[in-house]
Each structure stands twice: as structure tokens, then as C-alpha cells.
Image 1 (cartoon, rainbow, N blue to C red):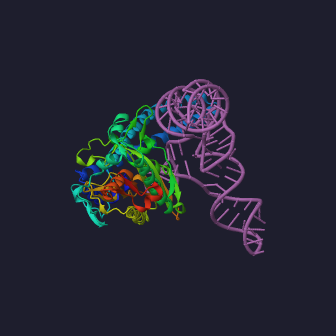
Image 2 (cartoon, rainbow, N blue to C red):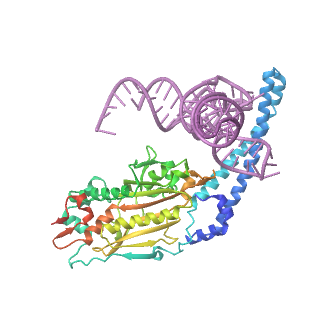
Image 3 (tube, rainbow, N blue to C red):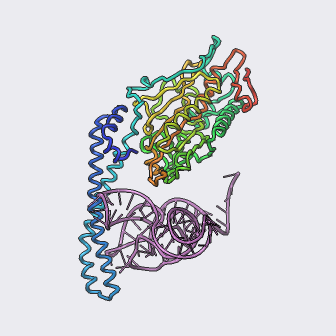
Length: 425
RNA sequence: AGAGGAGUGGCAGAGUGGUCGAAUGCACCGGUCUUGAAAACCGGCGUACCGAGAGGUACCGGGGGUUCGAAUCCCUCCUCCUCUGCCA
């Protein structure tokens, strides 16, 4: 959530930033917020004064009763009702203003970093580099949704029967591949000093609000109405919320966490050819890294996370490229996001397998996540996260790129995790 | 899930309607003493909002209520503990 004080101090920067995202009537929205905040201050002040007045009277009554002067006490009591009524009016008014202010602030996404270009759609994401050879496949190569059938790795029909579309069963070597990839990704993280966390995959409303999935993406999460809990769309939610309502010391940093969870997304409104097979699922596995940093260091941390993710993809011998998302494609809470995509030769498509983002203090503000500086000031921390990595799409690319007429080769780093290095017919 | 008990500052723990933002101890910070350290002693020590400041206001698990006045009484939700039941 944006800070009103920052909006006031850097009005132009906020106007520009929101315009980059294609927001309309930006000045008007921001002015309204500043006005509401001023109104809030005024009403708060009046309310404080009213409370002060009645607090004085109450104290007097207390003293008088103790002194045995009942009559005088009753007299003062009769004077309190006007202040009480006024107090009630003012606090209703204040509540209304605060709600309005909060609602307006909730509507506003994070301000993009200066490096982020405006853009009109994902077409305008900036391609920063591409690495690795595109696979030279034999003529009869197939997309993974055929390969998984041929080799009996993933069963979508069974998923339909037991749950519904987008909830596949992984079987035999398919299941082993999922488990192996998860373990490989976790081991990589541990080697890079991330602390492994196994979080709950159901979270409460406060957690969803704090990392910004709520209210923005309400319709994208599965909601259990009888307990008012949400199935997580990413481990980011429970991992980042560990630090909700926290005051850290500067020597608590760096804070590096890694967690594997299944992720649940309703994907309402998704359609088209790119949803086939493992490309887009309602339930999928993902290993996520999260870091909490000071405001000074967060861009160094972001670079570190990018290098980290790149290293894993590289080790899997997959061709990949990195993009910087344009303002229009940037997630609601992110200030900057780098996407990693791997090339999947069977469907001849680039698949997004990781998003690495810096949220600066946007989430921290909602999380009430601060740290104390050496000088003793309290500052909002910065939060960052990245996929490391999304499992099914990596699986799709491995299957497609390594297929031969005799079977599918497995990347060498996975051999110890799989117990096989080749999937033959 | 049922019955009972409990949630107070970084921690421990007092406070059951009035000058309580809250005793006391520990921890922490500064100082005195000391060659140095410890001990002892003195002082400081929660958060947020408003204000240039003086100061004001709010906060005793969350929300609501009673009252001139609530940490204290009532309602509700959450969490923890004990017993009973159930179950990976």
C-alpha cells in the first residue's frame, strides 16, 4: 500500500508511475487521497479535543465522589452528554473517512521503478537477453501433452474424474519427476543459504490482505467459506506473512527463505491455446524464494535473486531468456519484475517459469514490517520474491526439448534425484 | 467437538470501576564508582496518530456494548492451557 506522506512529497513521481501502468485520472485519484487524509487529520484533531474535554470532566467527577461531594458530581455529569454526542458524531465521521481512504489506497498498485517502461500489453515487455541453444528436434517431435500420454507420466483424465480440469495426476516416473524437481530446487536454495520453510497452504484474510492478493485478486483464489480461509496461490503469501507486524533489527538481515508448496489458482478468465497440458493448471507445485531486506539493499538483493534463478535454469540445460515486465504487465504490488522464460521445443513456445520481483515497501506497509536502523529510526523494510522454480512448466520443457525417437533424456543434474536418466518407450 | 481456565510492556508478573500507559522484578541503554570488569547506586527505557513545540489522543488478544469514567463489567470472535471425546 502506498503511503500518503510519500504521495504528498513526491506527487509527480506517483502521477508518472501510475500512468506507466495505464491508470486513468491519476491526478484526480491522488488529490482525493490527499484531501481525504487532510480531512482525516482535521476530524481526528476535533475528536481528540472532545475526548480531552470529557476526560477532564470524568476526572473531576472521580475526585468529587471521593471527596463525598455527590451534588457537584451529579451537576458535572449532566454537562457530559453534549461532549459525548459530539464524540460519537466525530468518531463515526472519522471511521467513514478512514474507510474511504483505505479503499482508495487499496485500489492503487505499486509505483513502477524508473527502469520500467510503460507499454500497452505484454508485447512491450523488454527482452534483456537470451541464452542457450534452441533444441534441434527430430521431425516427429511432439508437444508435452502428447509425450506425457505416450510415456504415461501425467493423467489428466483421472484428474477430471477425481477433481476437475486443471488438477492432474502425476504417475510413476511423472510423479518421480515432480518430486525430484522439488527436491533439487530446495537443495539448491539451501546451498545458497536460504532457510527452508514448510508453511501452511491455507491462509487467513489478514495474510491475503497484507501481501496484496486481497482485495485485488479475490476472484483468483480458492476460498473456503466455512472457515474463511484461502488456498494459497503462491508460497509468497505464508512466507512473507511470517514477518507481518514485526520490528526487525538491522543485524537480522539478510532474511532468506525458501519453501515448496502446491499453489492453487482459479485462473478465472484464462483461455486460449496456451492453457494446454501443463502450461496452466489450477493446482501446481512451485518452490519460492523470499527475501526481506533493508530499503538500501533491496536492489542488490534483487540482482542476487536473478542470478540465483538463472543459475538453476542454466543447470537444467534449458534455453532461456529474461524479460523486464512493462508497466502494463507488472503485478499489482511489484515495483519491478523480471520474468524468466524457458523455450519449450515441442510447442515452440516460451514458458514463464519464474518471476523475480522487488515490492519495495508496498507490501511492508500493509504487513507493518519495519526495522530499526543503527540511528534508531524505524523504516519500512523491502520485500522480494522469486519462483525457483515453477515445476510443471519446467517439466514440460524438459520433456519437449529432450525428446528423441527412442525416448526422453533427463538433464544430468537430475539423475541422482530421479533414479533414472532416460525415459524409454 | 464438549466442559472449565487464561490472554497485561522485550520477558516475568501485579492491578477486578476513578488522577492507570499501567506497580514490581529481570533484560536493555546512559552515568557514578573501579586500573579494568562485576557488584552497588543514580537516571532512562512501549507503539501509533496530530502538533513547530508545549502537549493532546488512542492502544492491557481482536471487534462491539454498558458507564460521566473500563485493563477491570457484559456480548462476540481469535489464540493458548487442562480434562473428556474423536482422529492422521
